[in-house]
Length: 212
Image (cartoon, rainbow, N blue to C red; front, side):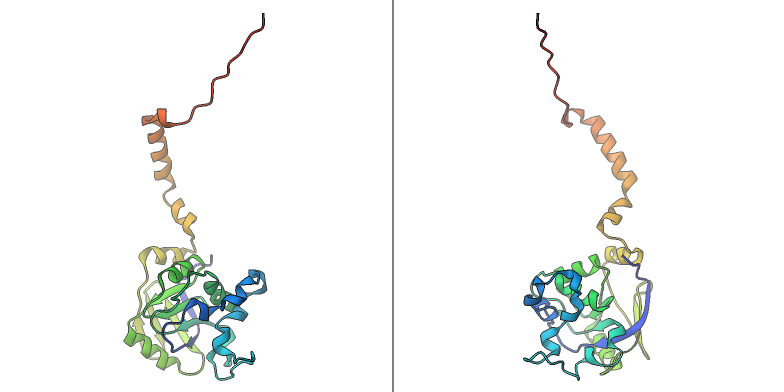
């Protein structure tokens, strides 16, 4: 994965609470292979009418939204089912960070595993960021090193799990995290095999029957 340190990009405001995974990608689109690009399905029913016509007033249809890499929303973002496709839709659209006061647990975990930062801010700070961004994509700075977010004059802190922060800063997945302890794991395995040799499977003895 691409390391995440400091992100200078455009941010979009999505002033809605409880944006669940079915809103992020409606279930009917999940039959499509990932190769088609799930970004086109992101928030599809929210930003289109019943006939499938795009709402020109929706933030993702504003000029510059295609270049936005940060989405700011309200509490309980990513609630609902555990579908990882919701994260795929955000990542395929181009987002690298979602900012909200709280996230669905599984959604947040899936986000980190796909290089998407779930940045947790206080509710008051989320409202300040939403106001600063307004109705059009605007410049935003997300600093994972200092754990701060800046939009114009607004400067707020955010939190993220220390383990997740390490993974994102280095672009590591779970296997990479485990490899950081390779020497300790190897040493433990050798000591264990020596102390409990009886527990290790042994090759069967070969019985040779001679014919006289």
